[in-house]
Each structure stands twice: as structure tokens, then as C-alpha cells.
Length: 52
Image (cartoon, rainbow, N blue to C red; front, side, top):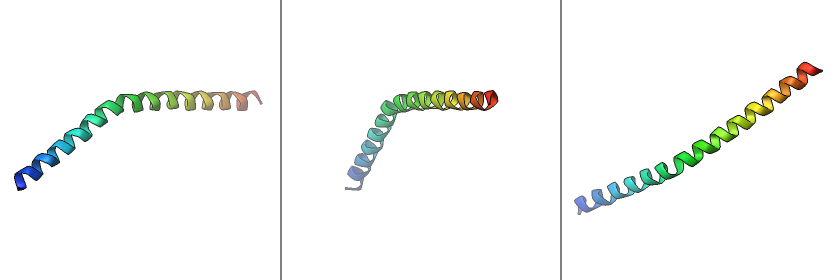
């Protein structure tokens, strides 16, 4: 009985890891795009301040 529960626990952990591996590249891309957008917005703001 205990052995079976450990087996299920291990399967569950492996399933979570697989899901993370699938989602990680997408979320990293999203973070990269969001970071670039924030940098661009910050750059425009400093240019506007320098211009004024």
C-alpha cells in the first residue's frame, strides 16, 4: 500500500515537472518581451524629460 502511494507521488511530481518544462520557454519569452517593452517605455520617458 505504501509503495503504491510513493509511486503515485512520483508520477505526480514528474507530471508537474513536465508541465513546467513545457511552460517555461513560453513564460521566459513573455518575460523577455515585457522587459523589452518596459525598457523602451523607460527610454522614451527619459528622452522626454531630457527634451523638456
